[in-house]
Length: 276
Image 1 (cartoon, rainbow, N blue to C red):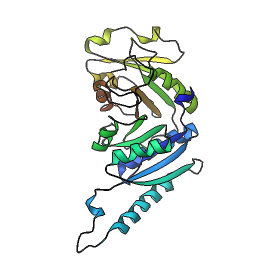
Image 2: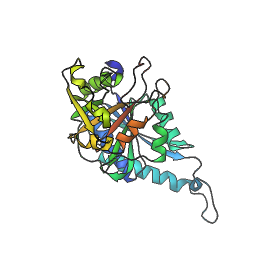
Image 3: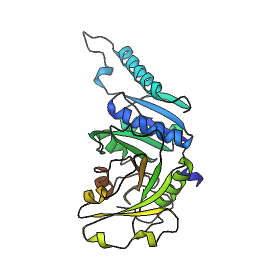
């Protein structure tokens, strides 16, 4: 399970509420895994405020000071036992800056906030870009996420036909490292709700749940999601190897999920379909 270990947790931070949601999740992951936390602040190079406009004059110093203030805000809430570093990076876009940073730092997961919809995950343009291009797992914190100091449950979204997909393997690895309970969830809607129970197909002792309903939203609502849980889900087959791509079903689950979701890159050795 070494390839599924969490040694470095990266978080995109920009001082807004979405950033604080992400930081809370990143702290919980880093603390539970005993991992190093990297706080990354991206300054857009094409930001008009980076240019000198008369009569304001050069505002580079103001922007740099604001960036350092945001970094100080982040550092103030990170517990002393969590080893952490801060990085300010210029880039043409937030997504590009974060992707470049995680590659350079060797990050194992990138955490970001969702922005709107209290208790539910909704995407932001920069987040959407990450969900279709990042080379590492992307963890999304729901708006208002402050619920836990540690990760208590790792839940993997698997299909009934392919319960041993890479999501199951990664979930097992993460649960072991985080000291969290492990379970698997299969989402079924409409006619598919009468399909077989994956519990009889699994080879682990983890609990298996079937979330079924008339619609996917109803299916999601049937699950009693633990407060300290995260849900791991696989990328679409459209994803390039070792990259993520948000599939249609994963996107629909994302919009109704009250806990953090982690989208995993497509495994280099995996040919089985995901839990779409």
